[in-house]
Every structure is written in C-alpha cells, then in structure tokens.
Image (tube, rainbow, N blue to C red; front, side, top):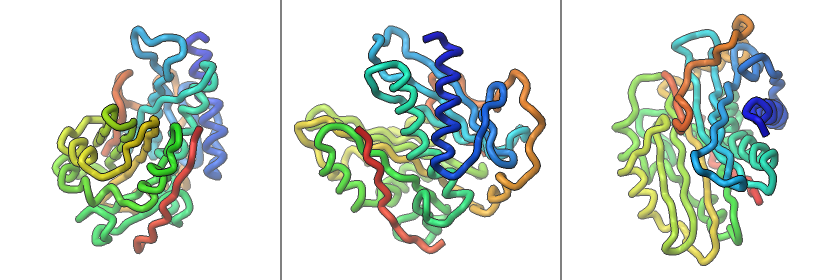
Length: 274
C-alpha cells in the first residue's frame, strides 16, 4: 500500500471512530475536520527495517483551535496489530479513539461518559491540576488479571510526583502510560507531551500490576489542565478557514506525542481489544 493510500485509510477510519464518540468529522485536505474549530491531523510512518507484518505507527493530532498557532494540539503515536496492513491501520486508529480521543472528548463534555474527570483535590487526581483519563485499552492473551488491576487502581497518584516537574503553564498536557508484557519480559513507559520520563517509568514498573506467562498490555492516556473550562467552546466556535496543504504544527515523524499549550466519580472504564 502506498503512503497516500495508507493516509486515506487512516483518515477514513478517523471519521468512523469519531462517529463512535458522537462527533461528525469529514476529510478536508490534510486534516479531518470536526465540529467548530476541532480537527485531527494525520501522519503515518513506518519504522526502518520493519517487516511486512509489523505494527503500523500513526501520529494523530487532535487540534482544539484549528487556525490558531497557539491553540492546543494533543499529539499521540499509536500502533495497531492485524493480519493485513489495513487491519493494522484500522486497529491503530481504534486504539487512539478509545484512549486518547476519548479523553479529549471527555474534557470538552465533562459528563463522565467517555472518561473520568478528577478535580485537583481528588484522591485520584494531581495536586493543582484537573485531570481527565480516557478508557484504558487492555489487550493481549489472557489479559483478565491485568484488566482487573487497571480497573481497581488509579495510576496518576502513583506517578504524580515524577510527572509534575514536567508540567508548565501551557493550556494542556498529555500523559501516555503503557505497560505490560509478561514476567521477565515487560515494558513500562510514561511519556509527558511525547517525551519519556524515566523516573515516572521506573515508578510505573515498581507497581504491583500482574505479570504472567502470557503477553498482555495496558494503554492509558491522560490530560492535565489548570482551567478545564478554557477549551469547552472549541466545538462551538466558528470553523477555521479551509485548510491548505499544510497541517497543524506538530511533531516530526517518529515523535510520540505533543500537546501545546467535577467531583471525582471513577468509572474504571475498560475497553477490551483482541
């Protein structure tokens, strides 16, 4: 499949997956436009030397004020598994919708439908910051123990002291958490705005999530903001002018994620894949 064909597949799947969140998006040149000034920018890259069955890596940027050079864009990199290239792309976009897009939509709505929202003083939150966690994606073989652990544990309080030094006064920060594997072959990674945070990754690895004989992983995406109301008009604002050949500014290929500048009611949202 050629590069432009892959991008077309990704954009079409973004439209479909956003519909699952109750959003009507449509393809417009290099972006997929949504309500108001929201849009999703797409980049797809393949790791050098990857074989034909390797996961396809996608860079997806959820813009909240398209046309505003200072507007937040939540970037995330995700990969999908499948027997065919199209299946891998589809599953990658679905993974992004469940974890990352779900968190963004919940930030805009704050209804407790697409994620959990925690005030700064909440036991499951982060001091000084409102936090939103989208549903966790737990996948692999015999993943029930890991699913149960994710459902019963809040990650942010355990990682807050390592994450806080990486936050500044930008409107929005994204935190991606990925962990799992099996005993003696595990991975635990935390990224803030796309940058690895070794201390947070070490703290995640030290938690007592189950390690078994079978491969299973969990992926979560969280948003942190000082002012949760600052972006609530993003879907109601006048649409930005039609896009040209350029897309919203974001990471170079192979970057992982970028972000620019409620009483707690944990739902322990879980979506099972594979």
